[in-house]
Length: 221
Image 1: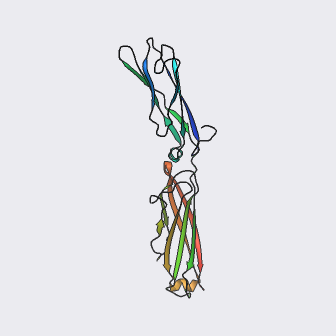
Image 2: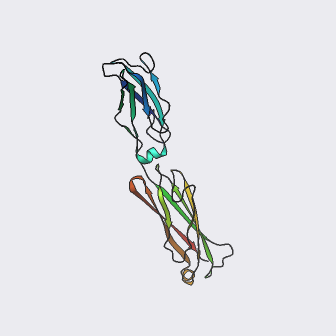
């Protein structure tokens, strides 16, 4: 990476060389590289464009900007193909060895915050409703999938999650908010509070599991 560490937005500078190692002149010489997002390849010819005499070489340069998908994979792999036509009409082509550049090390992480309050007008009796809010933030540098929130509190409603994009997926820095409700029981009133813990589970690239918990205590007065 050009002055970077392989994080999203860093630039990779590629240099590609095609050499004529044969004993005849090649014409129609070109370099093909199918890496999506790669800039146009800027070629410096030793003589006429597209022509390489024996022992001559053409050097190409191009730039590529690291994406989130690259960081999720942990590397950028790129293969270029040099080709040219011999005098007898034979096409010669040769793929390069794969250029594999590592990106920053994946560091999956997330936070879960949970709050609960009695609904307005509650009098601290059985049947009053607790309103729960949850917020999940992807604080790591790789995309999380299979993101879900569970809460073992018996009687809790379904947790309704609002996703910023695809369901269950959070890119780095993205957040999802969720809500749920719970009706107080007489046992809750007798204890004077509702205390429970929610669990966040997600999967990072490579199958790494991320799990976080968050508790909330709602006093009943």
